[in-house]
Length: 347
Image (cartoon, rainbow, N blue to C red; front, top):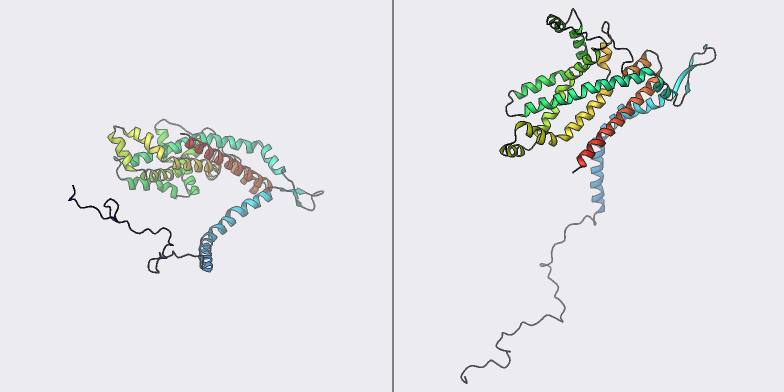
């Protein structure tokens, strides 16, 4: 069609003219208003950064200093002194007219303690004590805590307080109370048992261990119940509600959900119970004062150390026995921690 308008000769195919290219020209520098603001840096002010770190370290040191001072005085110094004391012994010089003198004995006190049958038998007593005490303590505390955590429990605050109150009583007073309750002709408990035809001598060789286990349970059961109950309160309730919706019963929820989620508390209580069992001292010492008691002055390793120090005045032997007890406690603590960590690491 000859009448159609033709594109201008300067435009290719009717396309609009392209904008001028900036290639070949240096980019224009942004104005001062368009430049982004630089983040403040502390490189230009090293004194301010150092002063801030110094203040942080000073505050941390001030807060931690009382703890480390008390830890050093109450823990490190006595342990170091016991180690030093265990390397020495007292011997008579000549005919004994000059009195005893302290001499270096090396590992002699450790050999004497390990070679003493009374010291070794004390660990067998502790083994029997742990066989009774730990299952009853752990199982009873878990069952009571689970019962308090259920929706059916009523008056939880009252039962928590009632269970915890025996722990607030010092161990010495608790042992004296139970000595009274174990003594015939004085105890209403023994009188009621005899009226029911049950005769049991709490001070006999067969009844001594159950008697001491009962005192320890009365003292520490409520304390562990509070620990387990606090851990159960931290369990996510949505998990329990989901399990209930899926049809899980109370037993399944308790053993499949609640107990696995408070594993750390279970391990902590087990560890503290083992260490506390190795330190058994107050209850058997008070029970040994009872008439006809089968508890001797060396019934447990701690009582052996006490007897060596304050009855035989052999402080080197007492220190060596104490160090050996601490080593056994450290090994058992490491074994329990390693075993539980390995079980948690398994898929």
